Length: 231
Image (cartoon, rainbow, N blue to C red; front, side):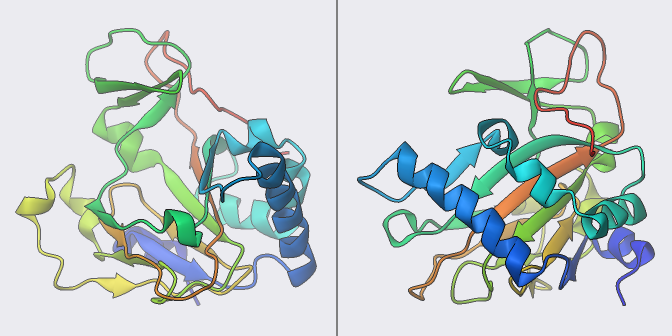
């Protein structure tokens, strides 16, 4: 049984059976319909601000089981700060090298001490916040397909979240673990945990909803771009 202590120690955990097959089918139906309307000519591999783009997903995501899990592993006062949908269709079958998730989404840019490496992509501001903010974030990846080494399952370096912000050149990945997650299961991860993803070698999809949660306010006047309380 996965406990909060296990998660905090290792920086990641896999928990199956958070969503039923019916619930997964409903989530996939909404996402696939949106992608079809978005572009009929090619597969869509990512949707940023997913819950803003497809608000109908929220009541399906926040099941009793999911809310209990968030409260148990993050805290009852945690709120959503980021939602991204990823797929690995054949046309967009990319490789992702080992990295940490260091950027958070911000509503508006203000130069504040401790917030650095600003970016702006498609009108969205991103920034690397102080370490205490990154340490506080909990990522939950909802898997809508069976995911294994053949279709881009994440590889992680256990306990690497305890090293702070590092360059990949300064760490060893010899102790990496493959995170095999069944459809309807979730992967918990700390954003500072080094993780990577290989290209898919199988003709099967890997649809994932990547959700980030925090319970910390940012330095004023900075605001979380996608802040959403869990209803």
